[in-house]
Image 1 (cartoon, helix red, strand yellow):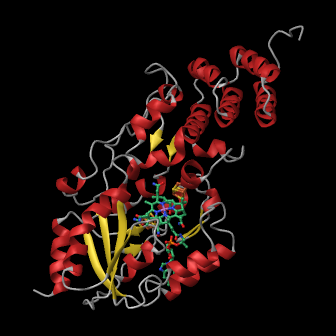
Image 2 (tube, helix red, strand yellow):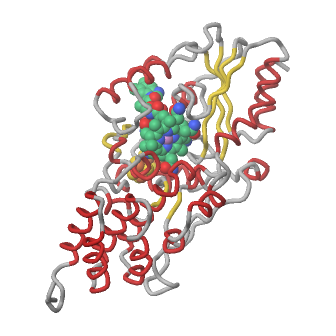
Image 3 (cartoon, rainbow, N blue to C red):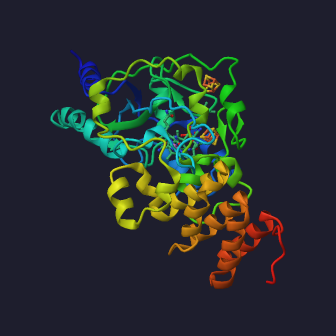
Length: 387
Ligand code: B12
Ligand code: SF4
Ligand code: SF4
């Protein structure tokens, strides 16, 4: 068996649902697409992204000048069983949030890096150099996967793997070994445009082109600080990431059953539709225990609770008012300001009274602004008070 075939067989045995090889020459077209999109502002907001990173990420030889091949790998991640939305009046109120499927298990960077180690060992024991990339490395993961024939780039920008769909995470091994390359697939999305139509923010500005500053995934995961008021209503009940453009994708409706061993790698899953009110009450220690192993950790407690407040404002169930009143006293200004916004959306006498009180005691200028705007949104009090 050739080294290429042996590596592929081992990768499959390790739970990767697709594996392919491409040469280490730069991804010229993808690199120039990334550079153009960066220049057009479509990646604005990502503090760690830059034009030079776009160029560098298109060159697998950047960190290994003698690289000959790129092994592209796709690993399936767990998906929550489709849960029906809670009907109005059900449960104890406040509604449920939604967490993107890729974040439900253990942080995938760790899972994939672990799974790649035996492949690295196979290369290194034969004297070849080998370097791993998973997401945060400087590499265009989707371009590598597409050129190595793992799947095709969908109109929602995700890589679609035949038989497995887009609920996969991507990684690469750049190596000095000269492996047998694969050819890109000829498949396309055809006339389907379901993802473009479902996106609530219009983030998919053209087929295959995403405007980062409109994507719910960006706002709820990557953005630090306050979320612009005009974006908040569009976020719906997502509190970490967004899967809408994948959920409607017909390629994902009949995915091959992922290897149970591969799914075990992600460990116990967190709740995909957590109770929003309950989340709003978690302290730093509880957040640490509950999310330390998951990608949700990235938002820290303040970012997650900011998102929870927005979801509560969008679910707009007045039974959440007491929980939001508590959040007006949170130590984090980010949480207090977004709690005020949510109370403005819910309205009613209790929300109005709490916002008026908060306005009197609040010292932070931004939170004060949010309280004032929320009070206006609540409308005039039913009975005019003396104050
Ligand atoms: C920045 C980033 C984001 C940003 C911006 C996304 C974006 N579209 O650029 C935000 C925060 C919004 C985001 C969201 C998500 N992300 Co993200 N993200 C990344 C990251 C770190 C860099 C992506 C990047 O370089 N973008 C710049 C654009 C221009 O490049 P690109 O998207 O990689 O690829 C495009 C170009 O290369 C071009 N291209 C490629 N070949 C060619 C050839 C030709 C001829 C041309 C013209 C163009 C072209 O088309 C590609 C697709 O648009 C990658 C990891 C990585 N290192 O690659 C993960 C990654 C893309 N994300 C991933 C995931 C899972 C997600 C989410 C699904 C998470 C979620 N559920 O919330 C969403 C999906 C949103 C969406 N519809 O894309 C996975 C995608 C897996 C897959 N099946 O494709 C990746 C690969 C991480 C990983 N290692 O698995 N993400
Ligand atoms: S992840 Fe959500 S917001 Fe982003 S492009 Fe897809 S549907 Fe739109
Ligand atoms: S929903 Fe349709 S257009 Fe969008 S990625 Fe899937 S197949 Fe392609």
